[in-house]
Length: 209
Image (tube, rainbow, N blue to C red; front, side, top):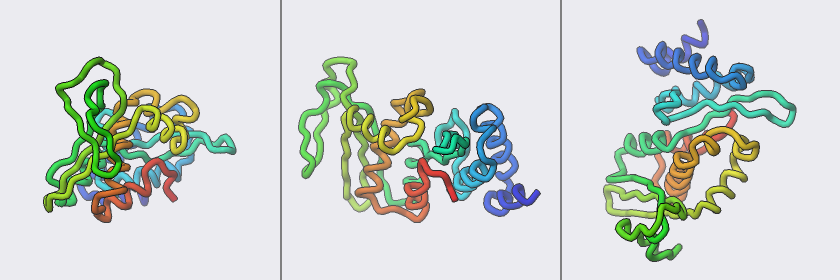
């Protein structure tokens, strides 16, 4: 009852449906159902405070399990790329924000200082060479970030527990995680971050305390 009350305080009428979706996600994942209950609660609470649904099909936010050094199953909060776009839209500062895979032939110019130039009509094969993200603010400022597939794999190896162990979203849906990574890094490096977005960047792929 106390747990339900906490979610009720934060989410109001949406709390019951949100808690039901969390229970459904946990019961549908054997490893997550064995995870430390406090870590599941804290991950769910982070999603609730950001007002993002926990639903694998929607792709806004996830609760994912991994085993720590002691072999204990722990729940981790993870934001999807749609979650970052949602938070950017809510800030009211962005005119547009998007991301896309880049195919062979589409990268025309690569300059880390002045930016990247793409021509999406120049696709020469089905080979994806990397991913790019772009935003433009209402005040006219814009920025693009491009990462090669190797850079994205290196990033996953460094920062994702599940990537290192060969399971999870990086393995099941590399495209979505690559798009999420370029959006996250672009926003965290160059965009004005609302309080919500600051919290999301810090909490992403973390065990919430």
